[in-house]
Length: 312
Image (tube, rainbow, N blue to C red; front, top):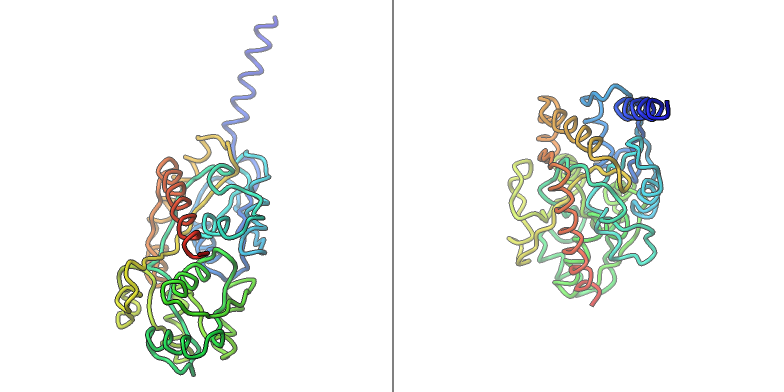
């Protein structure tokens, strides 16, 4: 009798586990609406079919820390996802108060996409048209120029601080809650420069509302073929790209991670997604969970070393 009861409970438990997902899934984007990670997940979500709706929540604050910390504390049952940028590993080395470990406190699902680097975009009336002229201006007037930052450790902060460190110049950081507000102030001439996604930079450069001086990746992007890389502008070994990944809280079941990864890969293969990515200067990746976990660990180690050098 007892054995039969236990067997029935095991069957019920197994059936319950197999029913995932049985309710809506919440995808947390730890940045404001309209930014690159928000646009990417909203493009991928309709192409994914898990049998339940994906509810996208923007929980912005502290350069992604607020939303990311929230996800880390949620149950590891597959109903709360985190979709964010390389800031996931970039922020902790620059902020001792970050309440999570980017490697240990999450289940690494997939690297969904990456770009060709950030674009060094400057205000339309800036007195410099090349990176070298920008550096010369910064040297002539220490502390006069400013750059917009979407938060410590973000894709706008890291390349700016690396450039400052390599060139030995003083350019003042001005923090913003998100990309959209920072772009608005650069276009309005209130900020001197901003390292932003290539698609947004190309849009404003082609309309004449801003200038793009360089890209932070190792190769040029066809959307801005005339724009050199930072390496071509004289910054040897400068290679900073932004990437976009998906995580669950730590210890989430491997079966759930695999199921999510499979749907992301399907979405990345969609013709519309490929076309949109191409226009936005993105490459779909779809890295498997185990490989992504190793990737995140390597990136975390790299950025910790980079942060140490920048802080010198």
